[in-house]
Structures are given as structure tokens and as C-alpha cells.
Amino acid sequence: MDYEHRPVMPGEVIRALEPRSGGVYVDATVGGGGHAAMVLEKSAPDGFLYACDCDDSAVEAALERLAPFHGRFDLRRANFDTLGEWVPAGLCDGVLLDLGVSSAQLESGERGFSIYRESELDMRMDRRSALTAARVVNEFDASELARVFRRYGDERFAGRISRAIETRRRRAPLRTTTELAALIEGAVPMRTGRIHPATRVFQALRIVVNDEYGVLERGLEAAWRVLKVGGRLVVISFHSGEARIVKEFGRTLSRNYEVEGDVDEPEFRRPRPPRLRNLTRSPVMPGEKEQKRNPKARSAQMRVFEKIYAP
Ligand SMILES: C[S@@+](CC[C@H](N)C(=O)[O-])C[C@H]1O[C@@H](n2cnc3c(N)ncnc32)[C@H](O)[C@@H]1O
Image (tube, rainbow, N blue to C red; front, top):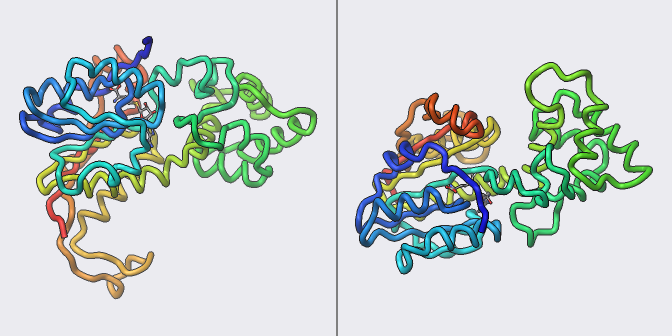
């Protein structure tokens, strides 16, 4: 099967996870299985890997890629926010979350993730779910659309774009990626930067279609639970919204207190041991060589945490 994806920061990921024989690991975003195969190689002869992806074609590709390690992995089609349901708590030495879309998804002519590929407006990572980008674009009211574009895409022209969508869809529903990209190009002032003017809207649609922020918050929590004390959590994010959630998760779990309710003021704090230690004060980024070889890796940021306490 043709599933192109070059794993990001392979050396850095392996140094962070330190796979060893007898260890138990999780690749929660297995994609084409690039990182997973490395973990299984480094933890030979008897390291074990739990792996999942919510995309059926990724699971199919990873199964093929990991076939030489038969008997040493459990690979399923699942969302990583369900890890706690099928990976035993407190068992794992390392968990990897390599977020976002793979090159195979981006370059597929039918998934709708790319501005540059004519395709139905789909953008579902899990094709069993009901919400597609076409439904968001054609069914959300204009004010809700503007909120989505602002909140998940930091889009300056969210109002203009959502009004243009509303006007256009009165004639006929928007069906394809290229229709939407062209509509956005016409709705905003002339492009100045390097990125396509529809980039932020496409990102926002993908986040909302896949509930990426809610899933990430629940997934980080689940990853922490399946780790043993001393185990490592490695997270690679690709944009500021994801990074914000990862940083906030790290900050909250490494505090020596918990907060009752939502307001973090001294009077609402209760002491408790920190759950995590942050091993990367600033995020690790791909080196120059990798950035040249793989331009998609440019925005990647890796953060590593160690579980230090289990209640
Ligand atoms: C950047 S790729 C991972 C590539 C992989 N590390 C490799 O070496 O080939 C991200 C993968 O995460 C998957 N994914 C995204 N959100 C997910 C979720 N909530 N649960 C499970 N998989 C998810 C995507 O389908 C995609 O295959």
C-alpha cells in the first residue's frame, strides 16, 4: 500500500523514549508506523507496543509496516482519548503523541485536508464520524463560523470570510476544497505572506471536525494514566493551539497543588505532590538538515515529560 510519511525528529524521539528490551510503549498516533517500527527495533527482542490511529488507512499501512514485529504489538483503530480503555493503567515506559495529519492524509485526493488538492470537503480523521467540513461550512450559521475561524485559526478576516460563505451557499452548497479556497482568496485582501489565504480556515475546520482540542486534553490525561512512575510522555505538536494545550497540561500536573474550581488563586489551592516533571524547558525542534529534507517538519515542537507520582 502507498502510504508516504516521513517520521518527524526520529533521533530525538528515540532519545526521549529510550526504548529498551522488556519495556512497554504506546504510539497513540501510529500513522504509517515509522516511529513505531523504530521503537520496536530498539526494544528488541521483547519490548511491547500498544498502537492506535483513528484513520483506517493509517492502520492498514502500519499493519503492513509492523508485520516483521508480529506478536510484539497490539494495533487498533481507535481514538487516542480512549487509551485508558484498552491499555492497562500504570504499565507503560513511554507514550508518543505525534499530532496532526500525516503526509499521506494531506496528499490524498479524497480526504479534503489540503487546499491544493481538489477533493470533497471532508477532513475527518476517522471516517466513521458524522461531522464533515462540508457540513460545518454549509450548516453552521455565519456567526458560529466566524467564531470557529477566529478561535481555531486566529483568522483576522473571520467575519468577511464567513459572510462570503453565507452569501455563496444561498446559491448552492460548497462542495470542494478548491471551491472554498478560491472563495476565501476572493474574500480577503491581496495575499502578502507566504501562506495561502485559506490556510487558517482549513486548519480551523480540521480542528472543529475532529474536536482536536477536546480530544487532545482527554488524550494527554489518558496517556498520563497508562504511564508508570518514571515513564516518559513525548508530544509533538504542529501549531500554537496544540502547543498551548500541551504546555498547560504540563504546567498543571507539575504544580505542587491542585485548584478547586477554575480560578487559580492562593485561597483555592490545596497542596498535593506534583504528578509530572517537564524534561524540556524549551521545546525541541527539528535541526536544519531535517527542515531542509522535510519542510513539513518545520513547525514541529517536541515536549517531553516524566511521570513522577501516581496517587
Ligand atoms: C503526524 S501523523 C503520525 C505519523 C507517525 N508518527 C509515523 O511515524 O508515521 C498523525 C497521525 O495521527 C492520527 N491521529 C490524529 N488524531 C488522532 C486521534 N485523536 N486518535 C488517533 N489517531 C489520531 C492521524 O490519523 C495521523 O495518522
